[in-house]
Length: 173
Image 1: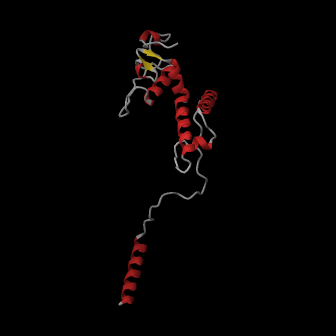
Image 2: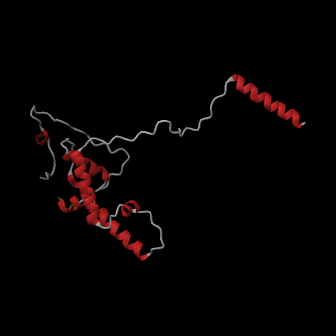
């Protein structure tokens, strides 16, 4: 199902125009082959939005061809799982060293590439089941604000404070 380059003809809708078209603006992001920005673009293209691109920036592209297996490994996080295995092996060799890398994965019980892939599959299934964004939890009513602004004093309060300071100075003499 992989096409070398998407053309206008591939993206024509029923009325003969692009249904959705977007131009990728990477801003200051680095545009190296296999970069996350191109993973996002691949997801957008797979979702049906016409984004002019060439496949040579996707992970797994070498010698003029896209290796679908390598590309799938990057989509499913297998490359992350392999690095997790390496880090955990180093941690076993040096148990005294504290390494925060993959601490959350360890806490979740992920130990190898297959576990990471299963986690990604579960996430993909959950997104397909309900693609709407989860509602964020609101702070409890009456919760203390994190703003540390000093309350502004009225003119009377400022004058009273000044009188107290003057009185304290006169007593000190």
